[in-house]
Length: 252
Picture 1: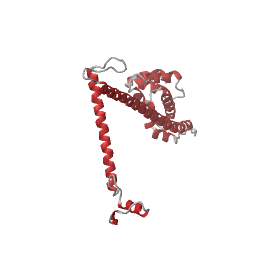
Picture 2: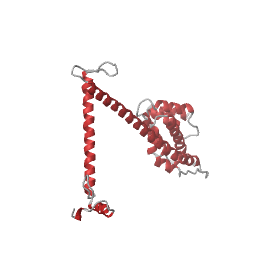
Picture 3: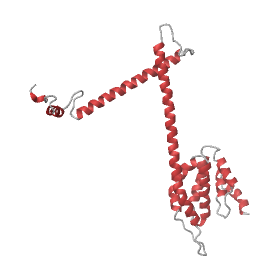
């Protein structure tokens, strides 16, 4: 009977469908969340971008619940694990922020009135989840970094291709018009101008880099007592001792 009135109670309390799904899946009773419950949670978590975080609010409350409500906490961890495996990556990012709560649950204890300690499964699940969440989060960060690098490489390849095309257009440009590339249709004037500007910008960038490298070499040479293009007096003395040339102060 209590299960029949729960949805009505949550509705009267102002809970939306996303919070309601988590509440029903993590009640403090002996019933475990069913596969259909878990699948529905993941399905609705994709309704809009903030849906996983709305659900995570309830899950986090369950993780921080009183020891007396240990069943809620245990179910919340199981729902969290399923959502990380099957749902949006937002669940994993949220779980990573809850590592401290999970670490505390490794020490959770609750003894019933008859003296039975019943929180052992909570502790065991938390001990498994902490390193697993860490490993999954690091793998996620690595994937994101790799995908970002791949995207940067694709952009750089496209940029280099545009620069090559601009250079070819510049070489093939005549007083009459533009010669087509590899038999293709001649590019429009606006495209030629855009490519030419990009090529000029690249040439200017390369010149700035060349000048910066030159200044760095000059600075390093002066800081070490060696003039650019020359050698130090100490080096001259070494050469002189080898019989290659006299030192600078030899009077020659």
